[in-house]
Image (tube, rainbow, N blue to C red):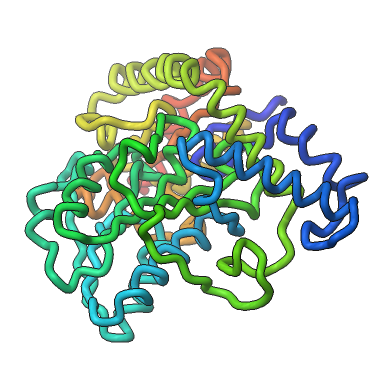
Length: 382
């Protein structure tokens, strides 16, 4: 049985192009980029070429890209850089539905006297920009709000958010881990100070990411050592990972136009079928702009864990919420913030597609879904 993978917001399979780009760095280009000899220089050139590829996807200057171990480290670097550069400003604004790699660093800062103001979302997952504007103060050090939600796919207008922050002279960080490679991002058109990304969300390798920093934003290391990445991110560079990230960004940029059209057709096919067969189901965020690949649906009187297990046994991989919370039996903090009814809250499925999924895979999923939902409802009632 060929397995079907519909959990691409958790991670994506590494593309053939990325694998081919990485292999030489595991063989003849194995050098340390800091070494002065030719083998080291070849590795250094590969890193700088990848920096150019990543920057191109943002329409940024390569010098503004700092490589990290992933989105979590990039988020931490942005938050602690902004906080450390403004010690007299102890107010930070975020939202209830951010990724743990944003919320947990902020919880840490709260222990050191920072006031963390958390914005609520409406039942569609939308943010009230007037409320955001009213929260900004003279002592606001940072606003950190994601571009697209990892669970629902709901997209926020980071262009407008950036302008609001700019008017008030407040630094703005956005986690674009889920949006990058799915929707265009142009830093020349955005008033943004920091953007965080991760390679494994766009068919690149795990364990590598990047942080874009504007020319006026402070950047400080969160770990300390030698002088790699201009002293901002010490440690010998992960050359194969960085090269893979660069190639993933290049490939994503080349396929961006066709991505949305093809995946949106598959998403609509799934959502139309679910709405027809399960009129009591809730498609979360359906009233807002969303990523083309993401469906978050709650079935009434179902168990998310049961649905996932049954689908897995039938060869289909989906999730209930963020992979970072996969062992957490509590309902999603995102759906709780969106005030999903208790009758539906425990029956969430996140179906996240990629450019390699097919209509045949979607048809197979839709064919077996009614039986699995019915089985889950019987178990839930017991």
